[in-house]
Image 1 (cartoon, helix red, strand yellow):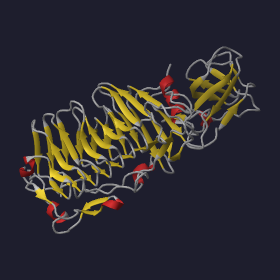
Image 2 (tube, rainbow, N blue to C red):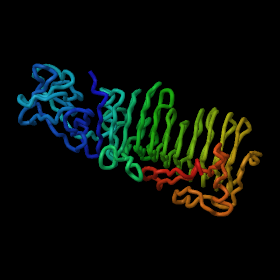
Image 3 (cartoon, helix red, strand yellow):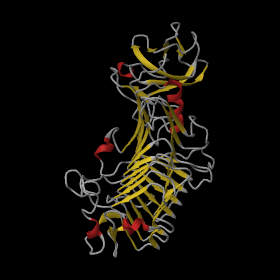
Image 4 (cartoon, helix red, strand yellow):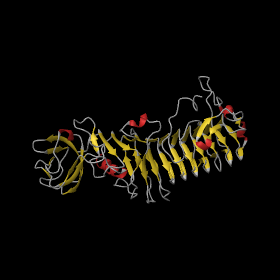
Length: 454
């Protein structure tokens, strides 16, 4: 028998990987999993009862109470069967817990903890892999977690893999669920430490009808030569990363996932072959690397080598309301692949070519370029709605404020200059949304004006 689909797990930087780590939403007891320390710590004086789904708790260890119902018990030692169990009922008269399943055989001893949050992403992955069902949620208190000690997935101090279930992991500031109330989403930071060969710090596999989401997590690769950040595998692009940061990694975000409101900072490849919206790449070798069926909406590449770059045999690519700024090579390098669409984009102050386009089915519409080594690589300069910039269009790029200014020849030319909407309103060009300082916390919230609706 597995734990309930209503399980909510907890991570804290000051938690303990031997804690219970979770609570069943809707249970009659008190949720002790949000606290730092365990509510109950059992020694080998506590044993499995004759009814093997019950635990006889030694009075010297803990006094059983009604509030224990719904909490997880984590058995880590003794002779009982190790693992996580749900406390489904209590017998206060005999100081016993009833569990969701057998914990071994009669009189076996146990070392265990009930209550308290876990301390590492990998340890939570171990819990979920052993017992996980669709519907689980995991809350992570913001802060930097103890550095990883291994690249192995789903072990204490290791990487995290979630497999083929509806699931959400979400960071918080003070109280689980309060991220939505903050001006910037709080971050729970996975630190690669001295490990240098992490395939991906966070991975998720999905299938048809499955949605897995991570909100407010940062992967800090510490410059490890083989460390990568976030990835989704399987079909249907059903993994979503929202308000996440990839820092100092080989690859920040990779294949078969959707990325919303994220930052890739100091990565070799910021985003590779993913669907991305409202996201930012800074100081990367390739900010946005395009592979087949890539989609980029309201994104900004700043201070990279290449901003947006074609890679491999890419086709069916859309780049909408994006900006490529101050990159040391090309702004938008679309190669010569087929079926590419660029609308409402800005290329400004790139050392190479602003819009480097091939000749195979590339449609460039209502885009602006200026102060690049070369603004356009061919006659695409004559595209519909083309804007020639003679001044910086952005308010303060150096401080990552990419809102449009009102300078003549700059931002003034980009306002209401996009493709005409069915409502007879023209949107602004470029990404035009606020972003954080490099290397730092979550993205600022985006207003309803600018970018899409002008």
